[in-house]
Amino acid sequence: MFANAKIEQRGPNQYDVTHGDDTQLFVEFRQEAVHRPYLSEMEGRPVYENVDFITIFFAGDTTKKVDRVATEDDKRRFAKQYRAYVDGITVASDGTPLEVWPPLTKADVASFKAMHIHTVEQLAAVTDVNLSAMGAGARSFRDQAKVYLSQSKSSAEISKRDSKIRDLEDQINVLRTQLEQVSDLKKRG
Image 1 (cartoon, rainbow, N blue to C red):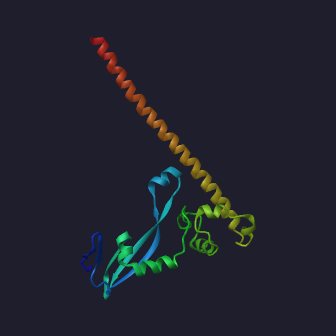
Image 2: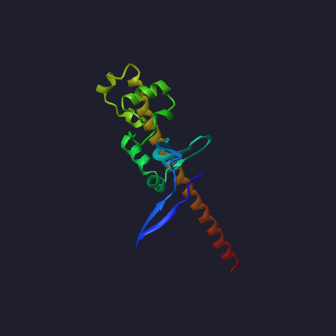
Image 3: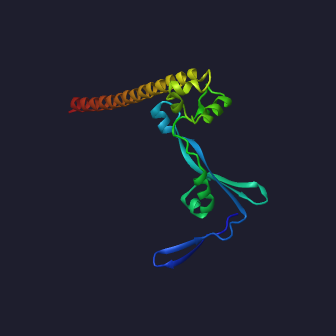
């Protein structure tokens, strides 16, 4: 599958790692939006983070490939491919990708991306001047995006408040139990 790593010492604290012949591998790096459940829960809306992935194809074998999050070792091992990826990358903003926002069709998403709008947050921030160049439905989508983000923030605040109430209720129950135990001890003693 992969060539075995070989470690060679060059100096007192210097090592070279080689992996043999990787010329049979076709390697691609890419960026994907990865859902972050904890941040999503805190924000009350889907939150994603850009993460580098690697896909390794094996020459002549259409049934086998490696597809996973890229590690620092991958970036060093396949430095040429990684450098090409970095040099040609278009960095998308963090936030809620348009693709996961239900009101938009694939055509809407493509149209907005052509206008350099990749997230719901960016759409909500579009100025009136820029809306005129975007077509008839853009204002409606922008207004929906603003409402969505506002409701998400309110939902997150409500969720935080509800969580705090549950914590306080748990603390009250613990105190009640302790008070009952103290009361029982006084009755016995």
